[in-house]
Image (cartoon, rainbow over all chains, first blue to last red; front, side):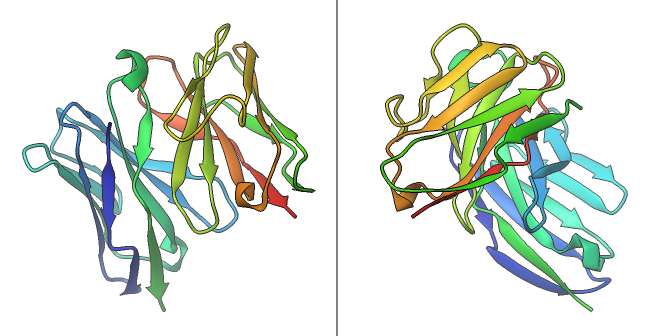
Amino acid sequence: GENVEQHPSTLSVQEGDSAVIKCTYSDSASNYFPWYKQELGKRPQLIIDIRSNVGEKKDQRIAVTLNKTAKHFSLHITETQPEDSAVYFCAASITPGRSSASKIIFGSGTRLSIRP
Amino acid sequence: SAVISQKPSRDICQRGTSLTIQCQVDSQVTMMFWYRQQPGQSLTLIATANQGSEATYESGFVIDKFPISRPNLTFSTLTVSNMSPEDSSIYLCSVREPALSYEQYFGPGTRLTVT
């Protein structure tokens, strides 16, 4: 089955600097890669995702890149702000509809802290 | 996206007892899932709740311990049976909407403490 590894486990950056979180996946059939942000005591929120037919996707200050050959993908946050402090999870999934493989598997999470 | 609610939001239970968690969605969804998130950890998929048939469990999770019901396309329950302190965790239901999309959304979670 799919296995997703995420690094680093903790990350502290100065406000205004950039943050990068990296993930690798094991199943070459995976073709959907969402990122979730979870603030303390709250539910995970989908913040951005990328499909395997796309190499990069950007939404304001956040961007994701995907390298299918190397089976890794990354989250980039630019101009970090205090409200970016949270735990971020990467995940991987196989296309919905492909029987029992249709599920999302999560990485271990990265606790991002933004220093004022 | 669909509005997902869970009951109870939290509970403290004694070991050996069982707790049933409800998940209600404000629209019909085909795919519903149950996850567990232990303190400070990631989300682990327990099972896929299939409407009208038995749930599909992930490795390490069994029906006797985590029975799941899915009577219709807007509702599911997860029971944590014969609880022990190791079951203390947050339990989250999740839906994929629309059915053939990729996006998956989470309920607010149920924080369970077993003493």
